[in-house]
Length: 156
Image (cartoon, rainbow, N blue to C red; front, side, top):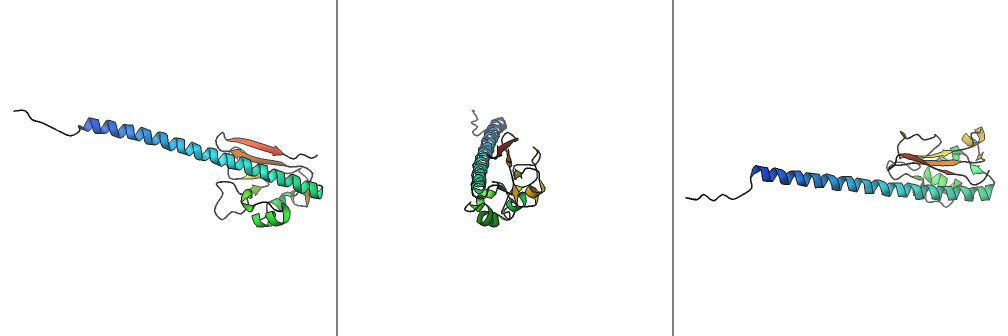
C-alpha cells in the first residue's frame, strides 16, 4: 500500500516565510529611503525659495530682516516680512501639524534633526532682536546624509 501525502512540510513553510520576510524588509527600507530623499528635495527647494525672498527683501529695503522678524508666525512672515511667499514654504516637511514656521535663530548641529531651518544673521543685536541684518546664512540638515547644507546671502 502506497500512502499518498499532500501538503507542505514545516521546513518548506519556514523557507517561504523567511523569503517573504526578507523581501518585505527590502521593500520597507527602499520605501523609507525614497521618502527621505523626497523630503530632502523639498527642504532644498524651500530654502532656495526663502533665500530668493530674502534677496528680494534686500533689494527693496537695503538690508535683510532680523532674526526676530523671521521667526514670527508663518502668516506674519508671509504677509509682512517676505511678502508674497507661501507660508507653507516656511515649514520643514516633517514639522508638527500645529507649526506655522520652522525657522529658528539657533545654529544647527547634526543632532538637531531635520525639522528646523536655521537663519543665522551677522551676530549684531540689531540682527538678533532689532530690525535688520547685513548678511545671513540659511541652514538645514539633509536627512539622507545627515549633513548640514548652507545657503548664504549674496550681499555684503
